Figure 1: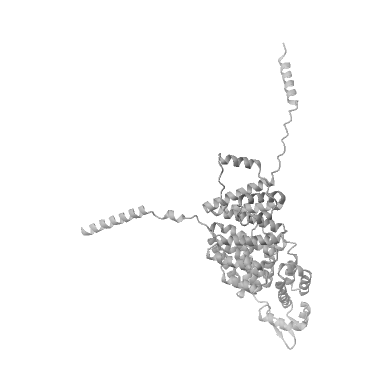
Figure 2 (figure 1 turned 180 degrees about the horizontal axis):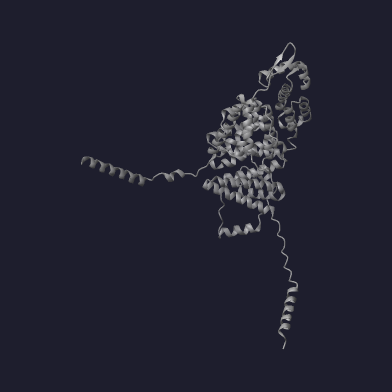
Length: 513
């Protein structure tokens, strides 16, 4: 017999041998093949068509927004891989547009030859027929407009502007011929991209009459989406042609719809702020630009160009108001380099250094001209002189006008007396001028709290908070027919009237007894 200790040792050795044996290596899984861009593009077109059909049937705006988002995704896919996706778009147009469609040949001529449909789609279509020829669903105008816009965007992105302009003309005529309220969200994009095509071609004034006619029609139809977009397009058209008087008249005679999107509202506020700044209404311009910056997307990766343009113009308007912009605008990583020329302007205005202001103007004149702010930057010269004169007035109780002109580095020292007199009249400095001796005599610094400046500052902040509260209340949304649940129905009203009549009869009988 074997002793139990030896049996246990042998079993332990066998278990150890089994454990130490190498396990069979698992079969390596083959890496998944990358998705085909053409298949994804075809699936997105079908999803957009399904969303459009649901929107037309239910009239729910979320389906229209989903279709428009898919259109943006289709455009990005076309930019990433133009060769495999454009034939798919051509195949979708050839399949959806009938042979007698007026734009079929023009759209197909602008794209590569159509791609062949995959065999899986053919098999699925054969199964769906169920032994008979399936009826082809008619193409909705909304889906037709989406496909036409995709072709227009492909032409604009590809630099084929002459062909894009001819297609934009046909597209605008096509939109004007329809009268469907479900087409409004898609017609808005048609107007926007058509105007963009004309702007890239340098012919934005050629489409202005059509935009004006469409604006009148949208106002009559209470088309909020097209009304807001067309108003912004008209303002941009006027401003690009330097027609600021016409733009101001358009602002005075038109009302921006309250139900418009935040993107269109931000654009409208920016255009309004620029027009008001050029017309010397700096307080209103600053209010509009501040609201435009807050209405813009707050994500650091979205609308970077718009926010940067608004910050540049807002910094100049603040300087013209006598205020200093916040440092956070110049320190952000995304805006530090583009805002450097404007930072030099802020430093020159804050210190009142006229020589530094001239250097900044000469060094970055091309940047200011490209941004469209050169005319406003030239107005800052008076603010630089005023800031320097204020610093001189605080530093010296008595100073000769020639010495003050030398410290300010004026081009014409003889204008120092008139500049100081105007600054005293405007309340910039508290001083007097001895004309005989040619001396500027500064008064003692006054207590700010003994003036009305704190009251004005508090009033400005309270007004802003009240306006913000009113805008928040207007933006609140309530479910439809929510108040009807609290109202009594007809049976309850009849029962209450019957009880009141019985109570009145009972009281009348008690009075008789």
